[in-house]
Structure formats: C-alpha cells, structure tokens
Image (cartoon, rainbow, N blue to C red; front, side, top):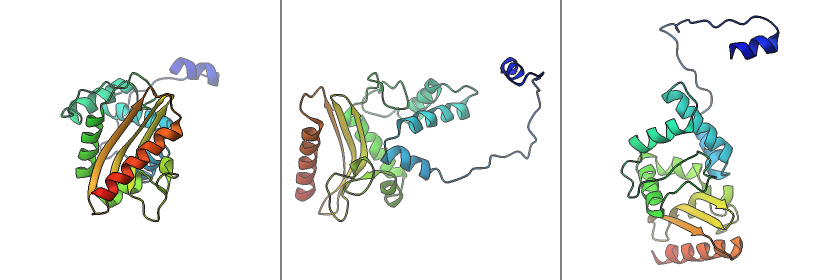
Length: 199
C-alpha cells in the first residue's frame, strides 16, 4: 500500500504505527435498516457481498468472505437441520447450497429475534414493493419475503399471513425447470393463495 501510494502521489509515503487513543469510538451514520431494506427488497447482491466483507473486517483485519461465513456458520447457523454449503455473500454462486428446511429454520430464528413490525418493513411485500411488487396484488400484503433467481432456478421464501391471522413460514426452491419463470411464479402464487385462504 505504501509503495502504491508513493508511486501514485510521486512523493514518499511512510507507514506509521500509532495506537488509537482510549477514548476512540465508532460513529455510526444512518440506521442499518435502510441498508437491509435495499438488500432484501431489491435483492441487491452487491450490497450483500459488501456486508459480508465488512463483517469479515470487524471480525479480523482481512476482508475475506470466508472469515465472516465461517463465523456465522459456527455462531448463528450451527443448529440448522442441514449443514449449509456457503461460498459467497451475493448468493449468485451455484455452489451455495441451503435446503428449504434450513431456510425455514433461519426465517424462524429471525422471526423470534426481530419484531414483526420492523421485520416485515425490511422485506419485499406482495403487491407493494421490492421484488414481490407484482405478486398477490391486494390492498393489504400477506406475503413478505426474499426472492432469488438464476437461470432455470427460482426461489421464494418468507412469511405468509393467513386469513385467520396466522404467520406461516415457507420456502420454495424451483430448480432446473424448463417452463417459463412466469409459469413458476404463478404456481407459487396460486399455492400461497390456497394456503392463505385455508389456514
């Protein structure tokens, strides 16, 4: 870094080793929810990857996704029913492997930790905003969740509010399909409507 700066600035740059004063503190800017909302509603993979790198930077002095991934698996995901295979933060790698029941357990853990009013505002909402904006168009949303899409693979998981007031957790993983994405989406929508009306 010192060599690159010296070369770029055309002047000598020296590395200094100075401890931070004891009263040093971190100043945070805006609430984290504004960032989570972009990542969850618009499915911003770049933000997700950057968050993973920032987590690694807090845990260590190195911005490597593997550091944050291993920490999360050991401290937060140790009780998932199926051991996840997790290689990046964006979710764009086909090497990421999470089962639907592990995703459901993860949503369950989040539901217990985050108040519903706050949680549902962070997620895409059916017929309202985010990647579910064109789903289940009704005055009051009843599907809140996160979508995922790679060619011939489409996922949707999250929470379903039923007509009887229950909150159900679900996870769809459609893989290797040859139908159109629109058909897959309609099948998921029809299924959710049926569950919503029945329960």
